[in-house]
Structure formats: structure tokens, C-alpha cells
Length: 192
Image 1 (cartoon, rainbow, N blue to C red):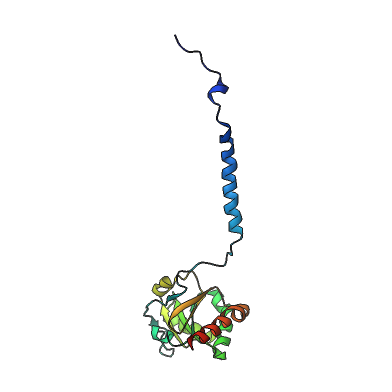
Image 2: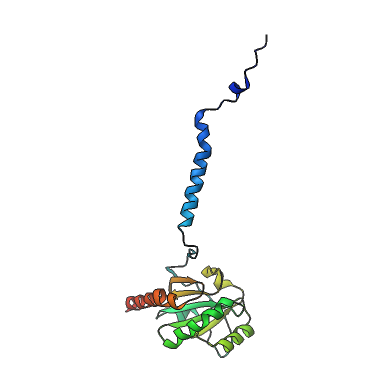
């Protein structure tokens, strides 16, 4: 003899706590969303801060511009600026770099990224050369080692050749006055 079929409601009855699963999932999603809203979208993490500048060998941009080499980043606080002739933001940043270079507070070195020697040297001839030395990173080897995500990016390097700060995007007068200059002064005091 077969059993009588149970009513549909009895077969599909779920424990009452299962109704809380969607509420719990929604709560978790809202917590992650709220946390994301508190983060600075301009602050990209970098693994290179407080690490030595990676070893590199760059091509010269031209015979008139001293080539950037690792030994030029030791013994004093320096800025290493990644730029390119194709970079619109680099044009906007360039007058600030010229002012920093003229002031003589810190040596500025350039890494011409994903460019040709002809384009890089023509760009510097057109806008002026703020760099004590500059090298060509046409194949992006140094940029990859530094974790460059776009140009311009600037690295503050201490007298021991360690990267102490990474500026993503153009240096503005505010960034120079409020961030970079105070850090340079502090690093110079540490070096003495």
C-alpha cells in the first residue's frame, strides 16, 4: 500500500532561520561597499616604498643629456620623474619640474618611458630640461620594476638609494609645498 501524498506546504517548509540568509548576504555586501567609500581612490599602493631603487641600465636620450645611472641616485636626496613625450599630463607638470630644478633644492632625474630618443630629446628641447640626468626606458623594464602605472610618476629617493615616496600623477604646487618639500627636508636631516 502506498503512502498518501503530503500537502505541498509540508514538503517545502524550510527552517525559519533560512529567511535570514539574504539579509545576512546583503549586510556583508553593504559593509564592503561602505568600507570602499572610505578609501582614497588616488592612493594606489606601491610595493617599492622603503625599498632600494632597482638596478637598471638605461639608454641615453641624446649625447647632450647626461645618462641616468644608479650611481647618480646615491649620496643625496633625489627625485626620479617618469615622463614621456606622448604624455599630456607631463606637459602640465613640466613647469613645476623646471621651477624645482631652478631652485636647486633637489636634483631631478628623468626616465623617458616608452619613447624614442628622437621624441624624448625633441620634447625636452621644446619644453626645457629640468633633469640633471635622464635615460630612455623604451622597453619599460625599469617602469615595470618600479610598478609604474602611468606617466607622470615621481619617486623620492633618499641618500642611500631607497625609494621613500611615490607620487602618482602630476606634481602640483600644493603637492610640492605640502608633501614633497617637507619630506625632502626631513630626509636631508636624516642623511646628516
